[in-house]
Length: 564
Image 1: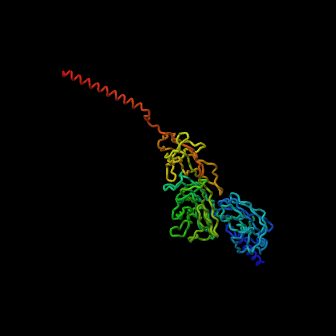
Image 2: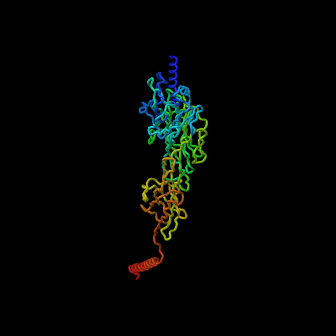
Image 3: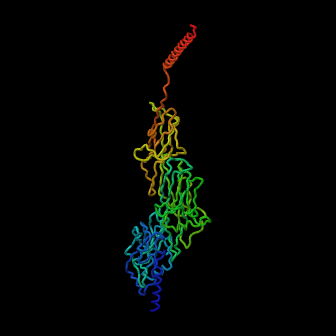
């Protein structure tokens, strides 16, 4: 009798040691059960399985099987995740043989990769699907019979880049109090959640051109650093580390001279952040084309030994990469789209992978604006939301105020941004003259045509992978005539300003028609000859009078001398 009782105790202890297999999701429970018939397991009782889906590395303590501390251990919940419980049909936990079959069992990490789970020594019954996890990451199945269940994560939002590893739950589980069993079980599977990187755009130069002193457009790519598992206590094998972390941008052909101008660490979605030490990353500005730009946090070289560890230590914060470029050419519709990319992977183990990657874990785009592609056995590359800048042009004709007007060559104009952008553009300039293709003055040609070839109209940002919506935009500018054609009046004061609304595209959009000039009024020329006769008459009379006077003076002198 004592021998049989001792054997029963060993079997119960065996069952208690293997009740949760495949992942370290719970801890802090006793592995000892009380004596009794099959450990006092009530084989006809039903229970429940509650899953708490959290981001890796966000719990401040391990969870407990009975869920006693579920509300106090923290953890960022992952919503909209679906799990499925597959009953293991050839493992009967109402028998000692069933518990024996699970002894030291290791769940393959790829057990749930197919449409149905696949483990060589196990068979599965009809699955039960959990409801989607809520905002706190919790979901539950009730009325679960005593047995063993393979738990698979079967669907997750795009932000979940590494699903929870499959694991086996036995129902019941041994409780913390000796002799107790838990039928309402709580487990805490983890995900490495990688949020979609967010891209924004800012235009600081209103005119296109490869200007050495200014890049017209800048993009910010803001990436939230994912939390990685840090279980350095009970099970260091589940520690998680970055293999690589790369932020890139593929500029379309209209952009040139692209350059990474800043790499910062920010505390929030809106924080500007502070510079990350340049020894933690490598910036590739691709001097040949300047179209594919990237920032890589890689460890293992003499120059860069802390980049990935720096990110792991700053989980939950944001890396902000700023890229600037010139706009030099425009497509017909005037639209220049742009998308950034996050290329990241993690691994688990007892120490970080300090070995430097000998080759890029992705294929850079071969053409401007194309997306990079992943290499075999690497995770998917994550695109940002899409952004676009939109550009147009101004064209008009300079003519005289004659009927019909005559095209005038040589008029010079400056163009300014208007002080408002309403439905009707006011003639109120603001700021300095805008530089376009290196010029701030635009001259009418022999046909009187003045063209300003590229002006910013609008920018737009999408929240998802949809194309940004720009509607029917226009941008108000103001032309100022600064040099009149030869022989014509230069307008003064407010008459020198001409408002124009610029629309997208490189065709004749933004055409304001014609701007007239009046001829200069010059002094009147002598045309009839009358004035010349009068002058001649006056001069002739003057000569006669002068001669008469001279004769009279001479006669008076002779009389005085007695000669007459």
